[in-house]
Image (cartoon, rainbow, N blue to C red; front, side, top):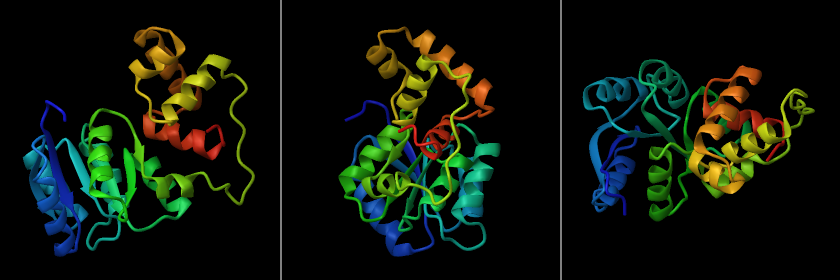
Length: 212
């Protein structure tokens, strides 16, 4: 159990889903449900007032869907972590959410324990994909994948793969026996060379190029 309270905003257009999520997560002493919303527009309004750490959001919603809402969160409230909770397991669908800034993607068939793990993981700054979402992501795309830029060093490629696997700077430093500052330097070089400014974007790049 975490010492720090995680402030969570729930977003879904089905009241039964919201009620069920709220009832289950309220049992966790380190999770505080600060509010609920029925669509992306309501979620943005609520988030501005309530400052949640994590937004758990469906994709298929009226007024403003999860994809468009995630884009706006990334621009207007970039410090808020977005965890998508959806029944859709299409690869391109998931990649689109990652590209727009989602920190994780969990299918609605997961257990409550896995959802809690996902909340804790994205709150800590890492990415999380449930097994069903991961299986969809690792399906080979129909088109020929792009090749990783040749100017990436062997160490940068290794760091990229570990970032895409969801490891934190500290964990990567431990695995590679380098300092956290050195990991951050590699991360910044990757962003510069690839023209990608977010960890979610780096993850998407690694997946698309079959680096993991």
